[in-house]
Every structure is written in structure tokens, then in C-alpha cells.
Image (tube, rainbow, N blue to C red):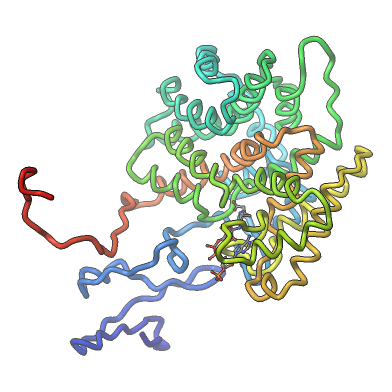
Length: 434
Ligand code: CMC
């Protein structure tokens, strides 16, 4: 393939000698894309890119990542600025509506989201159908999917108002659903949401308050919670977001699509990594054991990987990990906690980053490396870590889903394949087989 200076690529079929012009479409930032939409019609060939390492699946104006310099922007604003100066509701407004809100817009937005925090009372019955020891992500998959059975008035994806109501409902109800999953697992009564509290405070209240005692929310904990939500709000076309888009491309209702996203997020290579990091640190147990685990991570015959290390896009430090590392120190200091796992994590990071294997493969800590330690300090059990990621990512999923539905000429997603199975053959009756 050769690139001309007219903004096209020329693809030459060496067998037939035929050449094809492929248009190049520039974005506002980052690599431009080669438009292969007419490739099959013109050449009879598909492109082949399992894992989508070189494929742009959509056009999007939400989030930009430059993995080489370690940059993450939401609608042009850096994640560092948003984590430091903004709050989660502002970031939700930004992702959904394209701009940071004015004070009046913010007040209305917070009101509109907060208005939907309660769950239909009958949904509480769902929880009783689960085993008490069910993983909360399993409960999340079920209950979020079940929302479409309760909110029929916001499932028409062609109605702009219904799309917005569904978006508010999902952002508002996820913390309630998540906290109820936790309360169910520990056998405590559910807490109804409190709309006088901020998004993060209300979540902490629903998680940790018990009717027998007054629950005092620490501003440090609430701020750290809010920052965790901001850091996980959106992340371009990752596995769960692409799952939401693909599910939504068929016209499925938003609750079903977000449930698909929750399921995809659960995997240890994606949102499940924060839980896996903490389990790994506990398994390592002591600084002296770190070299052994680093060797195992490098061994191709051992499936063990350093959880919280590496990223498909970031080939430099994950900017979210930097904010999270800072937050981790602040939280432990302000809460006067001394977690040996933090020391272990820092030693592991130091040793891994000085090992040629990790340096050459550009494997740096990602957001999940430190988030588990912060969440543990905030009082969350390990099994809730991925659930928190799901709560925060809901706005990203919803904003990406809306962007897709609102795109003129939107089509169902339907990848093709390289078939390597048997060629056509005759059916052999059972008695003639073997
Ligand atoms: N430990 C040891 N080796 C690793 C690791 C790791 N954590 N990550 C990648 N590698 C090696 C991998 O074996 C491969 O080596 P080789 O080229 O010799 O075969 C090379 O680095 C490239 O890895 P890859 O698996 O081809 O890269 P990928 O882009 O497909 O995978 C990843 C990215 C995040 C799934 C992977 O780095 C990983 O499994 N990391 C651990 C899980 C984790 O922390 N996930 C959280 C991601 S950030 C939060 C989120 O977005 O969900």
C-alpha cells in the first residue's frame, strides 16, 4: 500500500495488478483513518484485524487518548484538570452535552439526575432471588438488564426525550443498584438514596450507613470517591464501550445495552483488573517475594501477568494512574492509615519499571494499579471494586450510546471474518459414520 499526498492510499493487488484508491479521513487529533468502507465492494476482500488493534470502529467527539505521551482528554479537557478542579456531575454533563455546565445548567443537571435515584420498589425482589454469596457484578448484570422491564417509558431510542430520561435514570440508579448488591451480600437492610447529598456522598451513605447508627461522611473520603468516579468516567472505544455500541447498533434499548457493558467490564483484562491487583498484592504478601512474581509474569509458559500493568493504548504512563497514585497517598495520610500493600505496590512498580522486559514492552502501571488500595482504604470490599468502575463508567457508556444513536445514517455493527473451517461437504447419515 502506498500513500499519495492527495489524502488517499493506493492499494495494489499484486496478483491482478489492479489499484484501488482509499480515502484518508483526518480527525481533529491523532492518527487519521483509511476509509475501507467500500473495500469489499471494490476488491472482494475484507480487512483482518482481530482485537481491533488498528481499526477505528466509529467517529466520536467524546474522549481522546494519546497513548504515546500518556494523554487523556474528555471533550478537550485533560483528565488531570478534571480530577483536580471539577466534580463528577460536571464531568457527566460534559460527556453527555459536550460542554462544562454554567452554574444554572449544573443546578438543573444535578436536579434531573438526582430525581431518578430511587429504584422501582419491586426491583428489590430481584435481589432476594440471588444467593447471598453471589458476586456483586453478577447481581449488577441481572438487575441492570432488568431495568428495561420497569421503565417502558424510556426505551424508545428514536425519541430524544426518552433517550435523555434513560440516560439520567442509568446514571442516577447505578449507585443505588450497586449499594443494594453490597447490602444484600452482607445481610444489611437497603438504604434508600438521599437526594440532599452529592452523588459520591449519597453512594457512600447507601453503602455504609446502617439504621442503628448515625453515618458521618468524611469529606476526604467523599472527595476521593468523586475523583475515582471522574477517573473512570469514559475511556474511548474500550471493550465494554464497544460492547455497548455494538449492542445498541441493533436498536436494543439502553438498559439492555448498558447491562451488556457491565458484563464485558467484569473480565480481569478490563474492569476486573482492580480486584485482581489487590488479590495479587495479597498473594505476593512480602517485598522479598516480588522478584519471583516478576519472573512468573515474564515466563511465557506461565499464565500469570502483573495485574494493573500494561494497556492496549497507553505505551507511556497511564495519566489516570498518576492521579490515582497521588490520591492514594493523600487518602492514606488523611485517614491516618498505614497500608503495607501500598508499600508493596510501590516496590513492585519500582522493580518492574527497572526490568528490561517491562521497559521494552512499554508496560506501565494503569489506573487499576493504585485504585484498589484507595478503595480498600475507603472501606470497600474487593468484590465491589469492579462494581464501582461500572457505576462510574455508566456515563461514558450512555454518552457513547447516545452519540451513536444520534449519528445520521447509523448502521448495525456487523463485522466479517476470515473463515478457516471445513469447506462444503456432504452430510453422512449416522449409521455410516465411524
Ligand atoms: N504482565 C506481563 N506481561 C504483559 C502484561 C502484564 N501485565 N501485559 C502485557 N504483557 C506482555 C504480553 O505478554 C505481550 O508479550 P509478547 O509480545 O511477548 O507476547 C506484550 O506484553 C503485549 O501484550 P498484549 O497482551 O499483546 O497487549 P494487549 O494490548 O492485548 O493487552 C492488557 C493489554 C491491558 C489486556 C494487558 O496488558 C494485560 O492483560 N494487563 C493486565 C490486566 C490489566 O491490568 N488490565 C487493566 C487495563 S486498564 C483498565 C481498563 O481499561 O479496563
